[in-house]
Length: 336
Ligand SMILES: Cc1ncc(C[n+]2csc(CCOP(=O)(O)OP(=O)(O)O)c2C)c(N)n1
Ligand SMILES: [Mg+2]
View 1 (cartoon, rainbow, N blue to C red):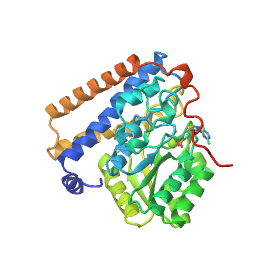
View 2 (view 1 turned 60 degrees about the vertical axis):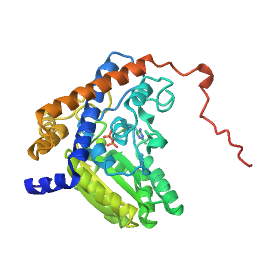
View 3 (view 1 turned 120 degrees about the vertical axis):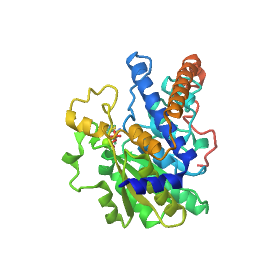
View 4 (view 1 turned 180 degrees about the vertical axis):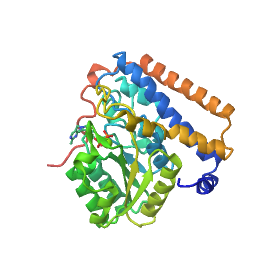
């Protein structure tokens, strides 16, 4: 948000309840990810995890602007999107632990979180590959005359994949109700964006598809919310898709196995000084929506929710051996 009076106006429009809900979601993602960090180091979470700390405002700002029937698709870094979209934290934790109570009955793990009943496709970890799928979902909404919007979340690295070009071009040509959210955290694994992208903004690429674009502050949840609301509103109103680039930063390594020694100290401290939770707290306090007592209550209730989610996961059974192949093949007879 560029200046104080504009920020106050935006918060007035959003209202206390929704704004505090967004703050709570930011805290939920942060506390969940912090716990997962330690649990992973204890060796109990199978595979690896790609953590979302630092990028919380992107998922929360966009998902807060969605309606119930809308659908999102995520990537190898889906914990924040899943929490922001309203998947129960306990089912997310159980999935990370490979338990039968998880979102994919424990057979997907961290990189395949999703629940269609909550409007989230199972996350797709192949970089860029949810982009054309989201175009397809949006096409289905269009063909069925349903006023629903499909949202793709992806990283800066995905914008160099062929799937990005195909998906955006298709969505633009058919004027589909989709929003393509590029979370530009400046790195694809250990590769700096400066080494692999010549244009200043990934959003600039929208021009080559004849698509609307916008650039938001991915550390400011209210800025993201405003811009996402515009893009989602346009998509729902038959105004076509938008490429929304959010400038953001991940605090941790690419995955939990990455020591993250390729980012300069100054770069990390620059972004941490614009921490999304601190920015949100400051804005909410300034306009009187958040007092220290309420902040402490929210923090305590989130800490309890995280504890309960982890406990639920640990108490849950592993899937039965005979379920191993369930869900791999359709039981529908396909005519040949
Ligand atoms: C097609 C493909 N190539 C490589 C990988 C391995 N890989 C997983 S995540 C990643 C980096 C992705 O960077 P970005 O799109 O910027 O997302 P971020 O990790 O920053 O959220 C790579 C190379 C993959 N999963 N899929
Ligand atoms: Mg990236």
